[in-house]
Length: 118
Image (cartoon, rainbow, N blue to C red):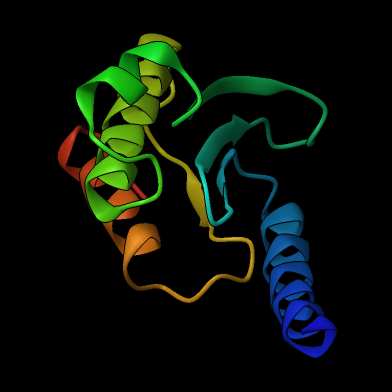
């Protein structure tokens, strides 16, 4: 189990170091077996500009479960709306080392459809 997590963390570290060199605002996600979280983090990494997760009552009420593709799509839509309201239109997608399929892909696609560019 730890080998799998260490591999994911290595992938995340490589991606984050590249994003840090570019100095762009990033959309960082994290998923557990229960919930999905998304944050828009400033280019210097010191400030969270917007966030959304399946823990929030509005998103939890909109979907049946909190750890499925439908819930991930709702989180993607919510984070894009909050980012656009904060004046952020373009971000780098930080998938935190998770493979780009299932919930991660649904979140990214929903954010793109809602107007966020990455």
